[in-house]
Length: 157
Image 1 (cartoon, rainbow, N blue to C red):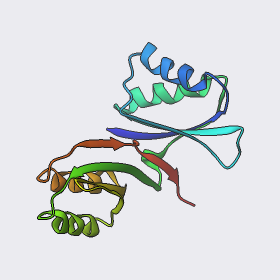
Image 2: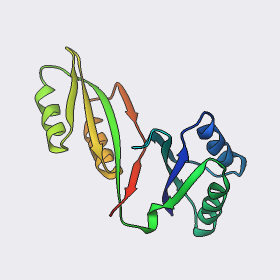
Image 3: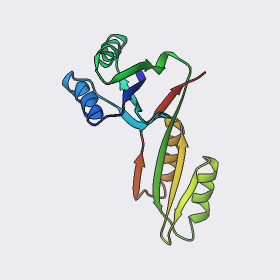
Image 4: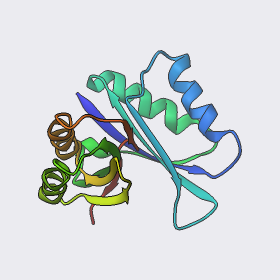
């Protein structure tokens, strides 16, 4: 089962390395990792996506809570929460297919953020499923470059 774990940590040098080292040292695989400063510059939020049964995830949560620089750990999988991911796709275009590509972007509420003579760069934000569907539609045009942030999440309420 997939779990989205939100971890508040002290915003200090080496904390990310220490947390990711904890995962690799215990043989836990990270599917996605996003880290950023919160409303308090001394605190960062790590959103970690992992796969595992309840026992494995319980062990991960326990190990995270033991870390010195960890303030709070929350498994969002069992709670109401909001998740998003950002994706940038650079796609080759011609005068012939530019309109069709713009229509596909519009359907997915994606934005064109860069226009060049031979390419468009599209920015899309949404659930992983939405981004995968957009990616499938864009593959017929060809993809020059693709970058994804990994998921971020926050509990509701």
